[in-house]
Length: 435
Image (cartoon, rainbow, N blue to C red; front, side, top):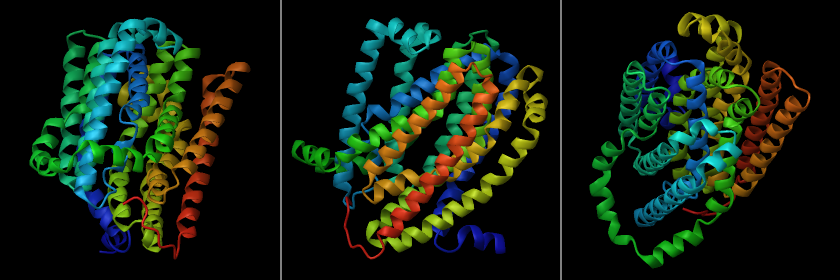
């Protein structure tokens, strides 16, 4: 009873009830994905995983660009008609930018990918377009589902993505389609559930389509312009910071080291990432409903959520720190011992990143996307300095990862504290904001 009250009572209760629904699907997806990895690591080599790591990094960095981050604003307006115009605007931008990326890859793909130390992706440039379009479409539909607080629908898609994606990776691997099988399965992981969400909300969106017009599209484009102006570069820089270790490994070391690091990041982020994403979605829905006019309620909600996230993330972080290498050898095989070492080094960084997952929404709700952009730029400078230092002094990759984990942990703590101070500064401020 005490545990139930702790998780579902008080200011953060609604978030955790929403998260519980998402976590039910997320936990099933986690079990499926984690159960598949020991099979995959015995089918595919570290070098194959190196190609997957680069492919996933490229997709992750480009997806935020496709909709110019207007998609993030969909849960915010009080009127469904405004939200529907944001949906149409985001969809149009998504199609245009995806076609632009595909055209550039078709014409100049080899040169561009070589410049980015991603030459392994040259034969698979066409698959990049499928991954981008699938991931962006799923994000678009899931934002409408978030607006409707349809957590169960989102949870079902998480299970579908994990199940079908894992099956595709294993099946194609057994057919010796390597490393393409890993990338095709990753595309399924990113886009699975699009059909389900479309069926669930097709009638709802058709009902609100009557509010869409060129005049309203121009209005929402201008009214929410701070999202492409500030949130887009912030999100890109966030994704870059998350993928920077893989990009550094790909450009400085061989594909096998990149694959070891890629597996470590994937295995570490998979369990906490699903819970963190679930919490982030639920927090966004609840905090957006309160808005900046109710800063004290948002403050109580935020402290409650951050505290519970810290407790949930502490145990796996400690286990990885103490037993990461042994666990990876036991579960994935002896050839993945280095991945276990990476996981132990990055455990603290993953904990603080997990706790800070709701923070970007705080800056959006309180109209401080510019501030969040500046923090993202600071993070980019820190990461660039770390990897330049490692490259210049030819440090072993383990040492570089230790510095990276320590510096980024401190960064996430400082940004979270700044977000809390931002909420407190709005106590007693009656500002309707962009809602």
